[in-house]
Length: 248
Image (cartoon, rainbow, N blue to C red; front, top):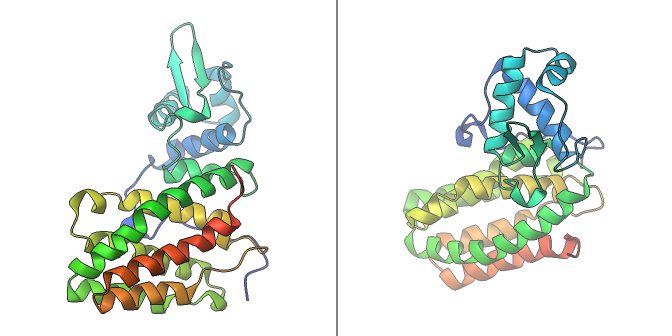
């Protein structure tokens, strides 16, 4: 059964995650300010509270706030200038493929639905081609890892974190198996897009759980070196996401 509560999804399996934020108090300050920004507490192009005011509200030093703003600026969320203050940037300037930016959104924020629709479009362009290349180029070990990850997916068990981890292994290994160095470097992007897919799709009770059978069909086609079948199976699986994506 699907869990009744809305569980927390880690951004990606620990082995795939490079530290994106500072540690300790600074990390908490970045995350809190990030959540306030993406959930519309501050209006774009309107000056945010002063450094001193934010430090007081967060219970941290002004230096910590200053460091947090630098991190958020690097993610495209804010810009700062003398006599201008710190202001939230328009959403078009945000890095919407940053796992932190995605994770800071409230689960019901309408922006998540749009990001889900747009990342699904991108995945539908890229991943069927990646599956076809993997069927042609994967090593025996990579074929086994892809198949093992597909069979490890057990949506009915209700263990969302294990399901997500297996899903990430499946898709990342396919990218690696393409033998295309540029495509392999898109692993962090794919992981973030999977995070969006879970936030908007898998974790919502009105949507069907992830399809284990679809992943197995892709994996078996790759295992038997059948490129066209792998491409078609991946495309069919992603069409499930397209069917629940909100209209633009």
